[in-house]
Image (cartoon, rainbow over all chains, first blue to last red; front, top):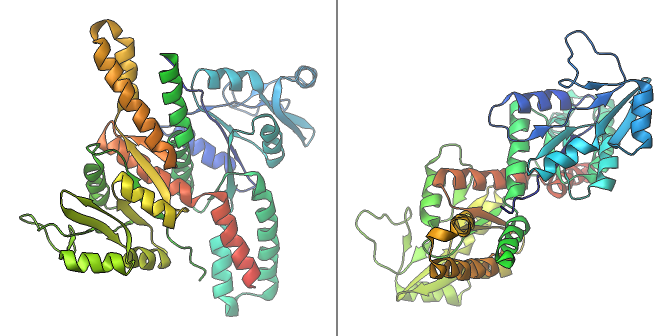
Length: 205
Length: 205
């Protein structure tokens, strides 16, 4: 009757951290209850890629018209092609009470945050912290440069994290997947959320 | 090296909601990584109960001395017997980087909140929300009094929840247990927590 609006879950993180692999593993699991928001792109389909499954494939003109009409929740251009998230699917699915999952670049996440500050932002981090710890511990066997480079990277990651609610280290895909699923379960148990449902129901009477 | 301090997890909720059953199920599972803080009591051991396992059994004099010495994180008197949580075990275990789990009454949770506002407070609720929804939906078949009683209870629960971070409905024990474990996993992934570890490590260099 008073169904709760779905969550918007945003998984992002530095390039090359393995966001796509983690996302694919999440959606290969039968008990995953969130809906994957398929991205739109102007790049040509690769062999085996299916429109409406891997991506929505569109022309540059169509894509630019959607930008114009503000039909994209976020978008960016990479190597001459546009990539973006159609906003209608996201809103509609959330309104149906289903959680929507986006796997996008850091710049896209920044755009989503402006439009949906209440979304759940998860930063997928390289297993840098534990690696760095090991390097510092094993100091004798590591060059000074290697440690310093790693520390420089860690400082950058530290700043990128600022906009996120949660940080999941991608040390093992399965462990990262379980953490992400746990975060979503916990989010649904937040007191404000459940209390809100109670209140609505009692007031409706 | 810079090991993170453990969490203090407090499970509470109205009498009779099944806190003990949920707690026992949590600690019967091999993958549970938190430590159960055994309560202290002045009541006599029941058959089969073991000191240091089910409870720490103490005399009234000993218990009152511990109250005097502020050695209890929380305590209360029920039916002529004291029940309480020894604070030393809690602090020491957290300092070792392990999560400590308390299963206590609502009044005890209030006391803990004053001393450890940073603890994780989980309210175990009767499956009242969905029950109430069903009753309202099935209005024709339920008496007005029954629905009104349930609504009165729901209003009380709503107020009790105020001090908690999360609410878990105890509809099925296993599902409640999984939610509680997910909340703890999510808590460890909170950005502030992980960023804090990074910062400490980088500053230490």
